[in-house]
Amino acid sequence: MAPVITPEHPASPEATALIAELDAHLTPLYPLFGTEYGEIKRMWVRPQFRGLGYGKLMLDHLAAYARTHDIATLRLETGIHQSAAIRLYEREGFKRIPPFGSYRNDPVSLCYEKRLE
Image (cartoon, rainbow, N blue to C red; front, top):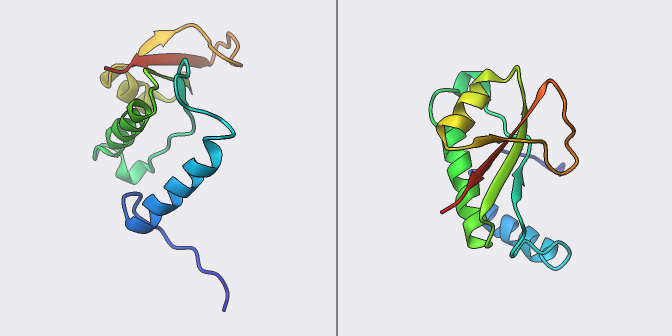
């Protein structure tokens, strides 16, 4: 029987177990506790699903995850032409910051940060 890949809700028992397994594997290799910041990378909502709150839902989920792992700040980088993403990030409390980490001062790149409560 050939393997079959199907979509799975991230809060389902199967997905939750798989994520917990991944965390258990990665945490000893890359501790998350007490890090300076967590970085959000490659967020995407298909155009037909935009405006329905999925981006906010993902950001809220990632912020909750960061809080439970003692990460007090989220950062991200996006492009200047991604106006919907920029509006979402700014609406959700992300503030523009200078380039961080491996990001360089690039005229088509914007960096943002949000301090978690």
